[in-house]
Length: 318
Image (cartoon, rainbow, N blue to C red):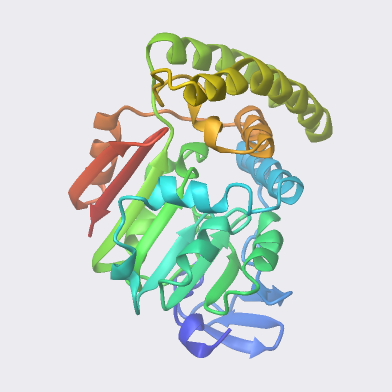
């Protein structure tokens, strides 16, 4: 990690700059706190074991760490998923700019952003960060950090773009985490979020059933849940996705707002991955478009735009 990238980090405890203690440690210039660097990754999370009062956070950390090491191939979903999340974003604007991927998972978005940006810092608080390092190994301008979005080890006002896709709705203090992301932005910098949406009609009813099932599934051992999600995914693929594809092939009128229609364009394993994601994370919040707008406005952003894309994509400028 070059000095120019080290300057993008800060102590999560006192927010002071960092310096190198040696090849395997960083040290806070303010409070003296040390952070181990292992496998080329600064490990800020491991320096602060989560306490008993943060049981949901610990379960979330374990859930996503397991998920992104089991479903660790970015290729089946990488390009298509990136097009969904960044299809309305001017990627050429990123030339020469600094980007923060807040909650990078296995690194599939960081590696897609990297060719457009000067520097990408990818942060995740679970064991998925080790998989992210492997997935971005051929992108020399991506630097991975193990850190908690609620205690972000990122310096203030250093980034031109901060994005967080499908993460903040799994955090108890969503607003607090969002404030940290905005603090990392330069004035004039841009923020992009993806958040789950509230639905009505048939989709809303199905999500209601999912919420009931999650009261049980979030307590299951991950290996057991993974097996159950495979069975569910096989059934959904055979009974829903294949008929959707047949209708589309026959030229019948189809609508991408139909429940689960998004999986028509993905291979089976993406559906399987998403079912595990849906039933394993202990906390899941959903928002209306108005609530997303209010959330972005509450942290001082302007030029706010919210549009649907299998959830809500929210943009704002600091």
